[in-house]
Length: 172
Image (cartoon, rainbow, N blue to C red; front, side):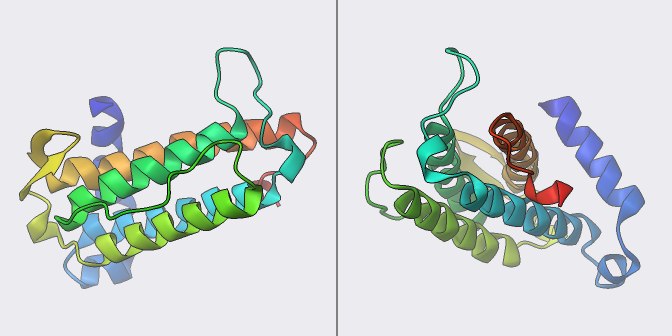
């Protein structure tokens, strides 16, 4: 994961749009831009998967699509609480077998929570120490970890969609 984080930082510094650099927060602005695009894909993929396929899993060792959505939602609340320095808040307990609309709505709320948390981040705050999965870490670990995690999970969703004959949002 550290190699992925280093790659993301290098990418952010090399490929940051001029508008982000001009605002003086090239890393946090780039992380926000990447999160916005990937978060939109996560939500669109959850919406695109047919309701009757939320129990689908490619192999016995993998999560069902519903389990993946529950995992992303829970991880978002933990990670974005670390980013914002707040508590994750309470959310009704989700089950992977809950109806699609309930899972999608919970995912959407978690993404909105992350948007709010990321909106407050500046490059100057990336070195601040936060509690991230029970450990002290720089805020940058949570911010970059979020973007890496979302990219990984969207890749999973895209495979699940394609295996069910659905074109992933980024391929449209």
